Structure formats: C-alpha cells, structure tokens
Length: 416
Figure 1 (cartoon, rainbow, N blue to C red):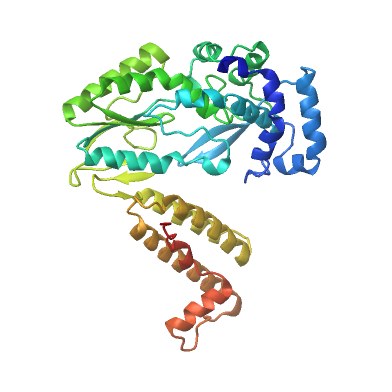
Figure 2 (figure 1 turned 30 degrees about the vertical axis):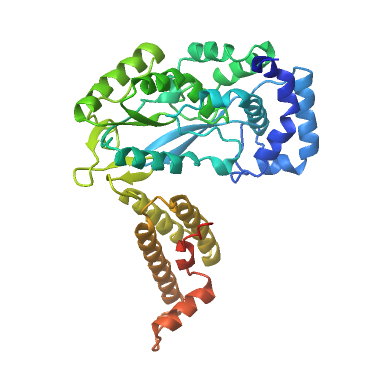
C-alpha cells in the first residue's frame, strides 16, 4: 500500500481524539469561533462533544463553519485574523496528522518552518535557522538578499493549491474537506471592513504545510543553483551569496520564478513598506558594514543578538501592563509569564544575547519598582523607603513582594 492510499477520510475520523488531546491544552483557551464555543467551554463536556463530532463525520454531515474575523493591532496598523470554530480546529489538526506521511517530502533543506503538532513547537525552527545563517556567513556567504513575499497567504492561487493536493490525496471525501478549508468563508456580520477571503487562511493548523507544498518548487529551484544558500520561514526568506553581484542576480531570479510559476510577487529592491521598513534589501555581513534582522534575530556577521526594536517593544508591553487597572499581584504574574517566555526564546547557546537579556531585565525591574513606589506614594503620601534603607534591604523587600525579575535571566545549565 502506497502513502496515497493511507491518506483517507476514515483515518481523519480515527485521529479526532488524538487531535483533540493536542489542542485541548492550547494557551489561548478562551478564543471563540462564530458558534461562541471556546476550548475552555468545549472541555466542559468534551466526551460528548467529541463523540458528536465523530458521529457527524461518520454520517458525512460535518461541514466547516465560517471563520470569525478579528482585527488586532500590528504596529500603527491593524491586522485581520480569522478564527475557526473549535470543532473545525480539531478536524484540521486531525487532517494534519493524517497528512504527516507527506510532511517530510516538503521539508526541504531551505525550509525552516516546522509542521507544528503541538503549540509549544510553533517557533522551534527559529534557532535552527539562526544557526544555519551564522554557519553560512562563517563559510563566506556574507552577502544577504533578504525579502518577503507580498501578502503571501491571501495571494496563494486556490486552483493551483488544490491541484497540488490532488497529487498527494486520492480520497475524494478528504479532498472535499481540504477544498472547504482552502475555499473558506468569513462571517461578514461582525461589521469589520476589508475582509479578505482570497488565498489561504492563516488560522488553520494546515497553513504551514500548505505553504510548504505551494512553495516546494521554489525551494528546489533555489537549491538547484548550488552556489547560494537560502533560509525560508513561510513567506520570509534570506538568500546568502558570496558576492554582491550574485545577490543582485538572485533578486531577478526569485522575482521572475515566483511571478511566472506561483502568481506571487516580492517587494521591489529598496522599497519601503507602510511602517517605513525596507522589505527587500542586500546587505554585507562582515561585522562592519551592515546587519540583517530576520525572524526576530539580528546578524552582523559575527554575532546573533536581539534587535533593539524587539527589546523596546517588550519594555512598552511591560509599561502598558503596569498602567492597567489590575492589582499588583496580577500585573507581576502577567509580566513574569510574558518576560519569561521572551527570555527562553532568546536563551540559545549559539546566540550572543546575554547582555541584551540582562539589560532588559534590569530595566524592567526598575520600571516595576518605580510603579510600586508611585502607587504607594499616591495612597500613603510618603515614600516606602522614607527612612535609611540599604541596597540589600531593598532587594529583600522586593523579593518579599514577589517583584524580583532577576531570577528570570539565569541561563539554563547545558546538559553534558
């Protein structure tokens, strides 16, 4: 039996319970779809809900619901995301499990976006991409052509996508489910303008795999050139070359291939996006001339550090939390959780981020202390340290209140 014969609708039904176990612990448990159901509420009667979902799949009465549009801030602009119902998320994840047999086929050497089955693995490809970029730079590939594909997911050609899937999936009923995912509908009753229903939805568990399938021919084309090294993470990519001339040639090669074969475009060389950032550029990474910011990492040719804009953004988030109306304990818990995740993401043995992290934690500790002192003075009209207090006593006081952030920056011990 070949792999295509194993990818069936019945196997999707068999994988519903494992798919739910993967999804039920997702941190965004209160997010609701158009039916008002969240992971948290679904869990209240999970056995009955799962059995009902399986029954509807077995009697072929299941259909994907419309997506719920939500507008969220992104810098100075707004970004539209589409939220599927919990049932749809379970079925999509089950389909992903069934399609896992073909995942490796589309995981090229250039592609660092993992096919995620657990939410904790969502960014697992970033450290690997960072290590590869630095390794290639060390090997003499010091000219970086960086770009991203313009509105990749909305511009994916649906017909091309479905034709690609038909080469891997022979089961008509499963293809019908995939067709519903690709030809999604968005509920327009929420009063949100500029709803986009072209291309692929980014909210599906299948989105990374579909992106890998769609861009596979592009990956293979670049790899076949032999004298360049590409690192692609969904629609963001950097191609490292040994000369500026080759980097300039890659801009033409990439632009032409994507347009002619996949109906996609990249930003013109040197063009600015709406935030004033250059989206397509060529930089020399020799430790002196310039730097590359890619996947939230800064490369200067010698070190991997945290971009200043990422550090500033985290400080701004902390200030917003401190300015909220929550009580002190809730504020500290939120900051500790957010800051802890940020630090763990950047605590990689091949990163040079310790100085960045130490400075960030020290500045956030000062922000928290200042906020507490200000609140104390508003209530008692005096300073909490009005009498003589030494630095050691202050540290003990902050630890007693549970506002000591310094422990978060301790680097994990490397296992021998």
